[in-house]
Amino acid sequence: MDAQNVEILLVEDNPTDAELCTMALQERNLANKLVWVKDGEQALDFLFASGIYAGRKMENGPKVVLLDLRLPKVDGLEVLQRIKADERTRRIPVVVLASSREDRDVVASYDLGVNSYISKPVDFDEFSKVVSELGLYWLLINHPPALGAQG
Image (cartoon, rainbow, N blue to C red; front, top):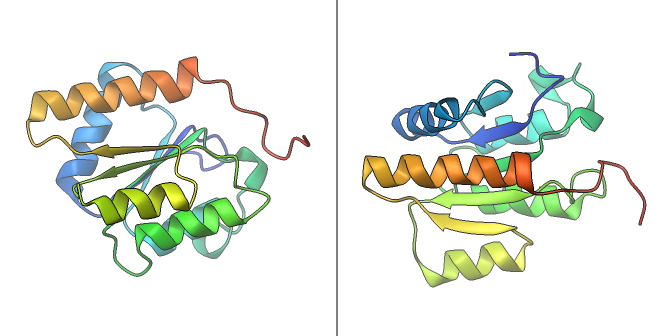
């Protein structure tokens, strides 16, 4: 995958959930420009063009970040906070796709500026449907400002 031309950044440590997300998006032809990272540190490296992604141009950021909360190295809430606190990335839509239905996680996510919070359905068919609808909305229907655009 060319890290310069990404539409979806999937931040998910569970390989099964990542595979289900990818399959659901492939069914709708939305996974061609997807990058999967397995922890919060890799997500931040990708978004801020550092570490193994140091050659990537930040302006080519994803159209949407699908973010799990329970991540190794750097947890999802910290990733969200860093995305929304930085002028260069704060307009990138972030959708939390988490197993947690706890109010404190939902409230904390919205307090940090998440665009949407979705609890992962347990049922495979329902999970697949939710992910493909997310992809359709954020990639084809939503119209975000260009990265770096001034208000």
